[in-house]
Image (cartoon, rainbow, N blue to C red):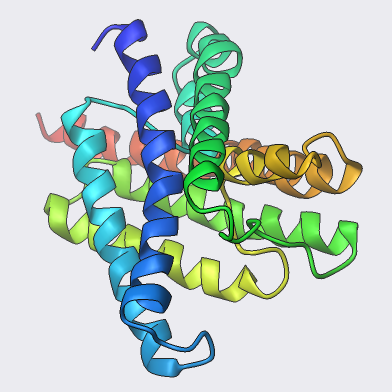
Length: 237
C-alpha cells in the first residue's frame, strides 16, 4: 500500500478504535444493563473487547499495515530504518492522533454524558513507569508474534489479544492501562488537558521510551540467535 493509503488507514482505524471502546461500554452497561461492579458484566465486556481486537487485526491485514496505536507505528518505524522512522513520527502518528481527537469530539457530540477517558490515580512517576512497563511487554509480545514462527493468524491474534487484555486489566486501576497515546490524547484534548505534564509524561514519554527500549532489547536478544541458527544450516549445505 502507498504511504498516502497507510496514513488514511491510520486515521480511519484510530477513529474506529475510539468508537469501538465506547460502543462496547454502551452495549454492556446501557443495553445489557450490567452494573459496573458486576463480575458477569466485566466478563462480557472482556469478551467483546477480544472480539473487537480480532476485528481490528483483520482490518489491519485488510489495509496492509494500517494502525491505530502510535506504539505499534513507532515499533514498525524504528524497525524499518531512518526514512520509515521519520515518516512514522512526522506523518503516521499525527494522523492517528487526529483520528482519535475527531472520534472523541464526535462521540461527545452524540453522547454528551459519555465518560471522560482514562484517569491517572497514582503519582506521575508511578503512572509513567506503569504505562512504560505495560508498553514494554506488549511491544515484546507483538514483535515476537510478528516473526515467522509457526502459527495461524487466529492463534497469533488470540495470543496478542489476551496479552493486551491482561496488561490492560493490570494497569486499569492505576492509569487506565491504555498503552495507546493517541487514544488518551483524544480524551485529554476534549478536556483541555493534552498539554499537561501529567498527560505528556505518563501517556506519551513513558510508552514511547518503553517502545524504543523494547525494540532495542528484542533486536539485541534475538538477532544473535538468528545468526547462530543460520550457521549450522550453511554448513550442512
